[in-house]
Every structure is written in C-alpha cells, then in structure tokens.
Image (cartoon, rainbow, N blue to C red; front, side, top):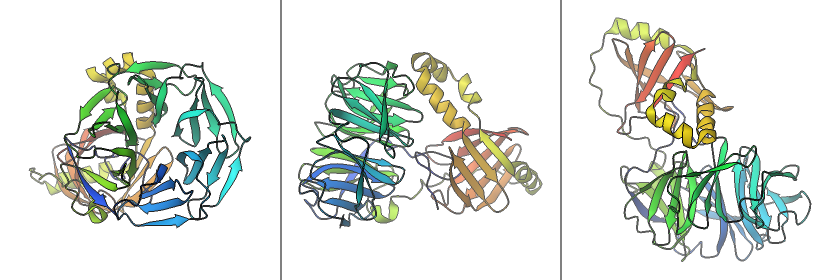
Length: 411
C-alpha cells in the first residue's frame, strides 16, 4: 500500500489536523536522542545524525532505533528527505546522498558549493536552499547542479518549508513569506512577526506545526497566514519537530523523544493508534435500495478534483488577492487529483502517487446522496457521503467530526 505524501489515501484526500489541543507521550528510552544534530523523516521512520557521527533510524511508532552504517556524519549541518533518499549538507559545504537502508553515501555536485547554507526545504525532487548572503538556490541533488532563483532577498530567513507547488519562510523577525520557486518573488502572509520565538517546525499535510521557546505548539495554514495555538502541550525544551505517519514527533534538549497527538485522539498507544482514522459520525438517512443502486452506478468511473466550487467562496477570493501564487498552487494540486471508482474498489492518484484500490461498501442511498464506508486502507471504517450535484459533479464529504469535503468532476 502506498501512502500519498501530504494526503491520506481514501475518498477524502487529506491529513488530519491536530484539533484544538495536543497531548504528548514519551517514546523509547529517556535521553537516547541527547546528541541529535538534525533529523528528517521518511514515512514512519525518523532519521537523525548524532554528535558522534552516527546515523540512526527510529521507528516513529515504537521509538525503537538502530544505527545505520559507520559513524561518518558528525559534520552534518542539514538533513533532508528527497524521494526516499536522505540528502545532507556538511559543514564544509559538501552535498551527500545517503541510502537510508544501510547508511552508505555518495558525494554530489562540486565540493563546498553549499558552504553558506542557512536554511533549506524540499519541493518535489528538488532542494531549495538559502545562503547567508540572501540568495535562494534550486538544486537537483542527483546531479548536484544548481541555479539561483530571483534576487538576494532572503538573508534574514531562519526556516524554509514547502507546500503544494510553493515555498514559504519564517524570517528572523518572526514574519512569514510565501515564495514563488519559479522566480523568487514573495509576499508576506499573516501578521508580521507572528512567528517570533519559534525554535522548531515541520510540515504535516498542508499545515505547519511549530513550537516556540515557551514550549507552546501552534498550527499554521501558510496559504492564508492563520495561526492557532493548540493548548498546553507540556513540551518545553523541544529542539526538533518531525512528521511521522500522520502525527508529530518531538525531541527535547534532554534527548527524549515524544509522540504528539491531537486532543481528539488520545496518545495512549501510538504504535497501534497513530494511523487510526477519526471515528465516523452516525448516519441518519433512510435507505432506498433502488436509489442506492442507481447512484452506485453513477459513482463508477473516473473523477478529477474540481477546484471551481472553491473559487466561489468569499474566503478564497480574499486570499487569491493577497497570496495568488500560493492559492494557485493549491488549486492546481486539487485539479491534479484523480479518483477511479470500480465495483472492486477506489484508487486515488495525487500528482502521480497512487494508493489503492481500497474496497468499499454501500450503506445507504436516498435523494441525490449515497453513503459508503471504506473497508480498507488508512481510512478503513470511515463513512463518506457522496452528494451528486448533477450527473457529472459530486461533493465527497467525510462523515467524521471534522467533516472534510472535496469536489470532483467526471472525466
């Protein structure tokens, strides 16, 4: 089964946000990550480099870890995950591609070319880095070739992240900027200085999660610059924040590893529950077997994500004016979603990454709505309501407390 980066496989293609608060639970042996210099995540695995030069792989569900290869990474300053591989930038500015299976590595590009890197992020298969002089560079890690993007506008960048088809930064003064990777142009997002005091951050789905110097956890929607506190998380001293599966993992200054879960789904057993879907909301709809059959056959076929209904929303119109490039990247991603429905299952394709087919069952049909239940995959047990706006346009609503929705049009 293939998981879709940034999306949960199933009818509703999305990553669950961390609700209105968060809880934490320590994982693994206390202090095991005391020497962590940096880290990156690939799926449920967390990769960290230690002060002694060792590279470790940690199971994000259990906290179990193992060393990979020889202790050759003491000079690693940055670590990134790119297409199932690890990419490091060393103190001397060298770039290395690391095999996460055994810790073996090979140099890429010209030695020393990345010596002045102060921040970086991965977008698709490309690495974007900011230099101390303010230049933004795009690197192909495989070939080691690079080019500058735009002007030297980024000397005050502290952190760099990617979302959809764009980049965004957090600056030294705590402001956030949306950056177009095509030309380096940028616009401010949200309240200037709103992210001051941030010590760690990571993307999970389409949200940015950050921890400040007081240990408070925040959720940000970068496209609109919204910032929401997630309550008392009791994670003071966090130095690193990493995604793992559909949750967050934090490492504090004492070398402890934490599982960070939403208040809506307790973190009592992360190994078993980290990938569990939100329970379905009870369905209150009479079933007409004839209608259910007719709608089921209408549901069969190939569907494409349809961003047009979103464009009518006043909030969309507002944000399209303030952050047009980022909004365009999100709508382009919506349009790039494909859903194939057969009697045997549902297959999702998001920007070339496929998941499924996952079996489903029809629960009820009435009027212009069909209720189905996912029987397999990450969303197993979750029910969805398929609303037929007409014969060729549907809205898919996940029947959970979050009620996420997506529009599709028939191909």
